[in-house]
Length: 71
Image (cartoon, rainbow, N blue to C red):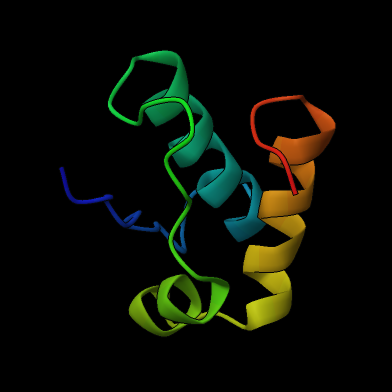
C-alpha cells in the first residue's frame, strides 16, 4: 500500500499545518495507514505540497503529541 500525500487548499480557513496533520490523522483513524507504517519523509511531503519542511515537521509533531505516531 502506498502512503498517500495530502492535497492542500491554500484558501481554506485551516492552516497548512492543520491540513497536513488532519489528513494523516484521518488516514490513521480510518485504517488507510496501518500501525507501524512510516509517514512519508518530511522532505517528500514538503516538496509534493510546496510547503517548507518546518510546516510538515510541525504537523508531524502535532500527530505525535496526539499519540497517533511515534518519533
